[in-house]
Length: 115
Image 1 (cartoon, rainbow, N blue to C red):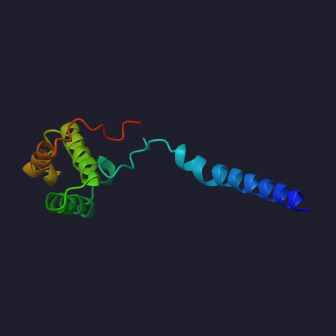
Image 2: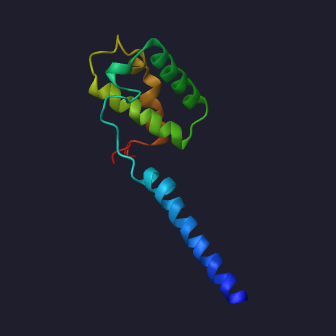
């Protein structure tokens, strides 16, 4: 009787593990980069609120560096490099603190969400 209960428990655990992987883990592992222009740095979504948030993120990262900030600052730098000459439109691109942060933290070698 004890062996039958162990087999049933094992089957139930296997099934629940399979459902967990299929419905939770698989979609998370299979996420693709969004090329639809919905990036927080895409030109189609640059509102004053977004620009203000990015400026606030720069302030926060300068006072409390972290690995999240490393990625954020690299993404800002990459965006500004791609949109050179539009510093008036994107005020955070003329903020020297971004490059200073990248140099101080030596994060230029980190790949930004490159897939």
